[in-house]
Every structure is written in C-alpha cells, then in structure tokens.
Amino acid sequence: MTEHRYVLRGDADIASAATLRTDLQFLVATTTAHLLIDCTHLSFIDSSGIAVLLEAHRDLEQQQRYMLIANVPRRLRRAFEVLGLTDLLRYDRAVSVSDA
Image 1 (spheres, rainbow, N blue to C red):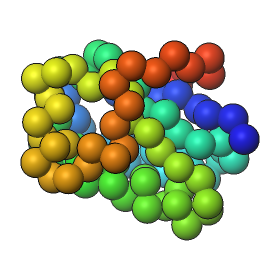
Image 2 (cartoon, rainbow, N blue to C red):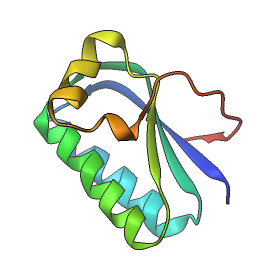
Image 3 (tube, rainbow, N blue to C red):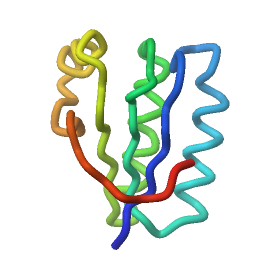
Image 4 (tube, one colour):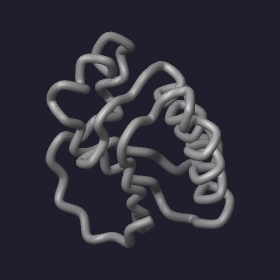
C-alpha cells in the first residue's frame, strides 16, 4: 500500500482545527493509502491540533491503515512526548509520495 503525504503548515491550533479536520477526513475517505503527516513547515501545535491528528489516526486504524507524523521540529516534539504519542513520530523519513 502506498503513502499519501499531507504537509501541515503554520499553526495547528483551535483556529485551524476545523479546516485540518476537513482535510484529513477527506483524505481518509477518498484514498486507500496510508497517511504521512509532514510537519516540516509546522510552527505551532496545541491540543486541538493534536486531537484532530488522533481522530484521523483512529479513522485510519479502523480501515487497517496507519498514520505517521514526520519531520516534527525539535521545539514541537515535546507536545507529542508529553502526551505519549512518540510511536506516531518519524523524525527524518525519506518518502516519495504525492503532496497535499
């Protein structure tokens, strides 16, 4: 199975959570690929952004697919570590997939 890369840019917070949720729900519903969330251009994430990622992860797992979160800037990794989500993180992963 292939992977689809979704590039997360800017802030993933309460203000952008609805848009992020819509984007990820669309990808889960319309693709059969695993999902790679590329955080190279992510500048901030709060609990709302993380909650949306966890929803997408749950939805993918129900379809026996997976989500990986890659290239999380060092300053943002702590949020994932505190919540015990490091099993979803892949810090440096070379992937040749389509961009969203």
